[in-house]
Amino acid sequence: MRHLPLHPPGALEYFANLVAEDEGFALLEAAICVAQDDVPGLDVQAVLGDLDRLAGRLKARLPVDASALTRVRALNRYFFDELGFAGNINDYYDRHNSYVHAVLASRRGIPITLALVYIELAGQLGLSAHGVSFPGHFLVKLRLPQGEVLLDPFNGRSLSREELDERLQPYRRRQGLEGDFEAPLGLFLQAAPGRDVLARLLRNLKEIHRSAEDWLRLLAVQQRLVLLLPAAAEERRDRGLVWAELGRHGEAVADLEAYLAGAPGADDAAALRERLAELRRNGAPRLH
Image 1 (tube, one colour):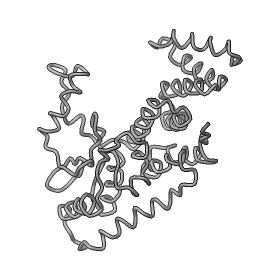
Image 2 (cartoon, one colour; image 1 turned 180 degrees about the horizontal axis):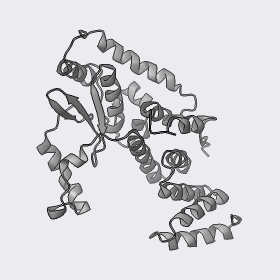
Image 3 (cartoon, one colour; image 1 turned 30 degrees about the vertical axis):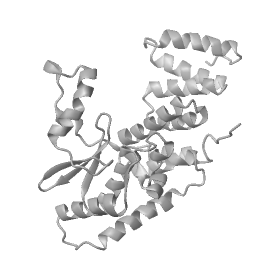
């Protein structure tokens, strides 16, 4: 039987400190330390140092007065051509694609982790780059004197507004956002707050582990989501359900009771009350 540590000592405390406040939110550092659940000895500061060295190599080649457009073109050649960063099309749902240190080592990832690396390098070059939580595919937005550029970090392509609008249509149809209710494209191209970016990264891992029924890894991700999004009742509910899968009935009851206390009229409330009754019958004491 596999014995995966739920988290290395101090890892959750470290993460909690990084995500405690929106001001000065340490997105990249927090994203790197997510992998500590799998790699307890991971040195987050060493990974940040690797990124600094990658950025330094490119900075040394550029004139101090290089224009923003020159820097973007140099970064794109460096990132996609020279370093060879690209989407992992052969194993898209490998959990390692969500680990920044692994993406740095393999040069393969998913849009959100590739974007995190690209944005860090761009920032060190003095460029204004931000993540865009576009439905279905994370993007990078660069602000240049000539205007905004939307970049697909999976392959390095710049995307026109027409292409983006076309990509958005299936989502609009599913959400009923067509016709009189059509949401403008610009609404989906806003720079994403760091907390939202990290939540999207963790929820990608959540789906990977849930699909694989890898309850220990899923619990580790849920622990981080509860810390990151303390007001998101559904994350505490989902942690409770994972505790139940692992036979930790007391922890499961505590989380599910907290969820129902905050959302007694939720659509899933009746089903969860039944689950609570089952957990209590299996020996978990009622918590007050």
